[in-house]
Image 1 (cartoon, rainbow, N blue to C red):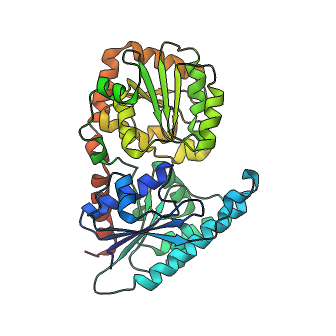
Image 2: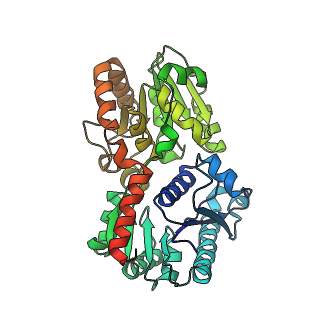
Image 3: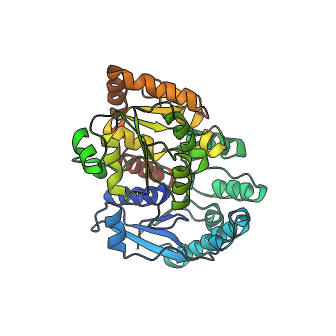
Length: 393
């Protein structure tokens, strides 16, 4: 019987950061002494991996007390054009949430060994309200009236609500969730992935990057609100700088390559295995988080993994000046730049690349915060909060 069940409607493995975040968060709970079960979606176009292979793919120890279980759901989202995918996506979410609630009711009954449930799905939490050990993790507050009502009802009935950012907390308070029920815990990084990294020159050699050019790196997804098109626009006037963009779904990668056509100093690598991402950060002079000012997920809610991974290597950052970024970083830890403005981003990068001392100071200051933002440190804080909220040991 698990002591902690994590419920997340994500595919595993996934080319997006969500899959990594879910499994690394789960592994941190397991390292803290919890027996953990992850319930995730069995998506039609994602083959089922053996549990040990999945953990190794994400750089995790197969000996951890961590189960991973895929739950079936109705999934025909990618069988229709993107503009018609709203209803299929909601149906996939609903069927997964229902199956997850059924699983918890059947297999996580009250026993002498208490089982906590940390659920990222509003519908599942709503169905399970009444359990004394239920916690809800929210990454953004929905806009629809029905889901907002279900969220409020689930939040009022559960033991506590974990908000991924200060912006999410603000919306939860506005919705009517009591402040004493909310804990803000941003994303984090897995320290094990950043041990024994090579020096910058060796990282560049391994990745086949220029040895002498200044290098600006972006790692992560390529959704429109991530602002990678703004970074490509900025690169047009910085031809003596080598830009590396690593990550993204294949369709988005191809779109970015088309946008960067003719820019020989812009290298778009596509999706990378999790173990290679730290190498890109170790090879860089500057990292960039060019989020756009809209939608709200970008400006207010997001808690980007890439920021915490930059902390792990002490990589100076240039970021969009948005509430979501200010919620994590201070002016002594990053360079803030007007969002949606390629010229402003280019000027900020150009200035920072010229100032060796400033880059070093920013990187050192950012790196000093790294230990408080590991998944292990995050898990310890969350478990302490859960224990205080529920009285379970």
